[in-house]
Amino acid sequence: TDQEWTNLIDFLGGASVAGDKMKTTSGWGSDGNGTNSSGFSAVPGGIRANPGAFQSGGEFGRYYSSTPNGSSLAWNRDLNSNSDGVERNSSSLTGGFSIRCIQDTE
Image (cartoon, rainbow, N blue to C red):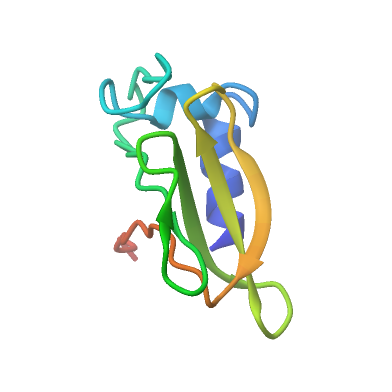
């Protein structure tokens, strides 16, 4: 959920530094690799834009949350090779972004 993303980012020290702790230690362009100290292992999968073209692989990772923002949008988090941070945005459900499947222990 959007709240779970917020909780994770807060736990990792805030939006300005959490991306570095989430990104893998290789694969990010422009010397943008992270430390992966969180074990999240975010990879720069890029996005699939409409009408289906892939772009920004190796430079950018956008991860959906399961939380809608209106009827055709969902909250997501963006990681970039040129930043140690994580950005919160809202994007169309018709795009193609990465997901991270987790199982609650409860």
